[in-house]
Length: 564
Image (cartoon, rainbow, N blue to C red; front, side, top):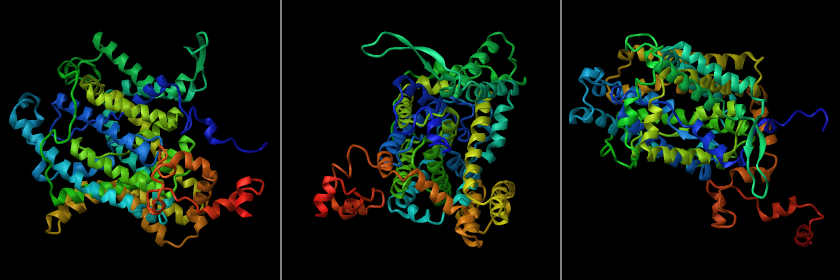
């Protein structure tokens, strides 16, 4: 129709239910693989163990992603480690009991194969494992019981916007530290990603293609639009290698830019085994402490709020309808199951909807679910091939820092974009969002510097308070939730009407909603279609037969037969 706005789904290279060619799936899946390394388990100078942890994260993330795509929320979103879990984990490991011994900070004193060093980091890992496994049971209950669906009645744009915004904003320090190792290399990475994703996105590249029964031909592929991050990382990595071989980058470890050299982490490639199969309990029997459980539960709460925003953002960016309540329940429940698996395998983190993947959707314009399935398979293979984990561990720090600057900027914008449904001319909404975000930055910063003042006399309670107040997403999200539900305001002013209307417009085609969010392989429709199935919070609610007949047109033979 003339004058009608262009459907945002038409801007995508592939929508949620479309299947790109398999070779695009594999490469696009690799882009979404998490590159964030764990550095707070006394492993700064043990790159081989870091590579094992990365392989374990890849393997478990692959399993959890397949579970989420097929049986969870069913959106094209990667499951992986997140800062929502990293923050409370670091808070727990910062307790006096778990602080790393001074000698582990000195590379000349560390013998990675010594039993003493192995015991130092494995005891900390086992403590994190136990806390994650117990806390994950809470998330499983909240999801599959439908409690999260009930809470969604009170969670609106002014709760989700500060939560998602504070996923990325507090990371400016760590992103700046990584990029600041060599700003030239970081800006080069940023320039490549911006060039490919923004300036060259509409430039097709002719590539040879083959179809059965047809001759070889050239097809125009929007390569720069589909692979901006992968191309940017690869070119920056290659140029760092050239600068290393030509000794342009300083060889002196004290020189500025030394960490941009590709040979500073190159030994891990030769040391890593070709094949290594991660397994549950590989670091020993997990241990449990009350303080650790409460700390990780704080991360679980923040993670769930983050995931709620991620689901809607991912649906919007991938051209899918807004997720219905049963899909959200399944998604949160499956994330809890993923955390249980991550704790058992010993990743040093839980798993949750990967916000960086949502940012990647905004950049790559590829929202196909099959891309994520291929990415999950790629992560499973990456977890088995030890050299792959070692390769990612060897990426120069400034290259990762440059990518983080772009990705975290996109995530921040995705969070703020939720405000489009609210009336931002309202002083009420301006106050709630502004105060929530600023408090989410200020309070954690103060709490991390003044932990000695947060003492009640009960160690476990002190630790819980410390973890809660140092988690920006929790502080900002909680304040946004509290103020939005207590400060007087109309449904329209709060953005709830526009948000629900937007969801209805995206989901008015019940067949499209069913195609995206119903369980696969005919579960609940062709198979296991028992009468009580629709009463489960995590299962689709099928309309009654009478309502189905009412919705049939009069001209439909089945409608005339039943109604007569």
